[in-house]
Length: 198
Image 1 (tube, rainbow, N blue to C red):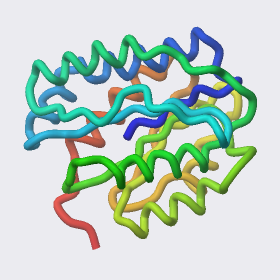
Image 2 (image 1 turned 90 degrees about the vertical axis):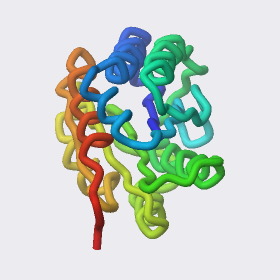
Image 3 (image 1 turned 30 degrees about the vertical axis):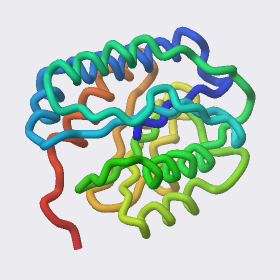
Image 4 (image 1 turned 135 degrees about the vertical axis):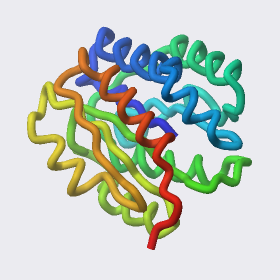
């Protein structure tokens, strides 16, 4: 599950950079090859802002061929922005993603929430609480912290957001470097699946 920041702190240009960065990530040959090395990878995208506002941008989709991966990238590029509102409901975004993973029709060997954002949670449930719930259910939470507004956000994500088997944090200095960070993240997330965890 890719959870994308759509809050008021993200302007239209920054939103477009996120969406294009994700789409280009799925066109990256290393990411495509990583996906095709598995029997299939199911992906969904949710846009989130405040604690009451989350919306699925792309429903769960199975990627199991070059054609399906590239078609998914095209769909990502066309995801329109939902209504923008104030507040950053990061914990609520994780809760929405966790419910969506639990309800989908796929039975994956690994279940991962990949959340990106440029700010700390300031309304709704604590992200650490939902992260701990996810980890208890065997779901890994990875993060991509965008540091243009809060230069210390990586430390917050490390302490309060990421967790679970193989969890890691990627950092983008700003939105212009988001695409490179997302490519690195997808390569690592899909290509380096842990064989086992204790």
